[in-house]
Image 1 (tube, rainbow over the protein chains, first blue to last red):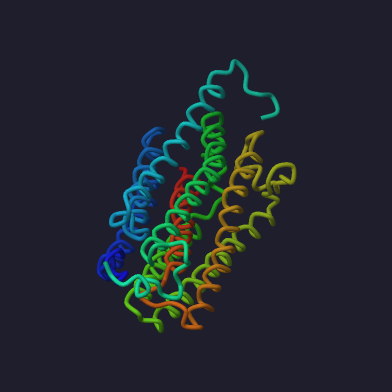
Image 2 (image 1 turned 120 degrees about the vertical axis):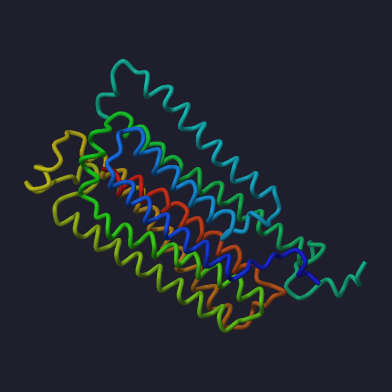
Length: 102
Length: 221
């Protein structure tokens, strides 16, 4: 009766996602030990973290099969986070002097 | 159209058309809360980004004090706990109440392991006077490694981010235990498992935040 709305995720999918997340965790540790130069180390860490975040949100949280509006909400949250960081940095990065007590 | 009363089982509140609509509304409400959580942690991440942009060399020095192995183990602990929560939801969907309860208990166990490891990390740092803000009172060997006037700021950010995250883990333990008690009373089935699903979403978010905390705090070379 009410079953049609709920997607039951396959067992193998859940285990594969957990395995991928573990592999990516090992990968991010390995990459951090390579000693990549400054922008590359942060970028590689972020790319791996974003991939892991996608796996958790899409599969564990079920956004892949969910009402698309829930995906819009989380993408919106990320957008507003970037807006907050961006606008703050427009200030903090272009000061002649850093606020003394900070 | 099905008979209306047949569509209205005991768990459906009268202001909902049917079980599906109630489930979707509850889930939407949880997602709105998670948006709020993301932006709440976002403020702390914003502080991280600005101070890292201001003092990049500080972050490289200070991250040395964090234990990569313990941080990595905790990452895997949270990944497995996310899996057990997902398995718990699946067990509820397939009417397997025995494994629903087991998976919830596994999750609580893993969450406790996470907090114990975190407590050891904190204790080790406090021992060397690595404390946030004005409590910063490093021992000579720490000062040898971190030669930076703003070193306390890194650890203020570290304690704020990991502390608030640990608080979320603690709240999560309480919520999952509450779900476990309700599962014991046989309140959930494939027809009704909304609270399991929603607490599951919360728990996955806790994992999601840690996915960013681990490389950004521990893995700076």
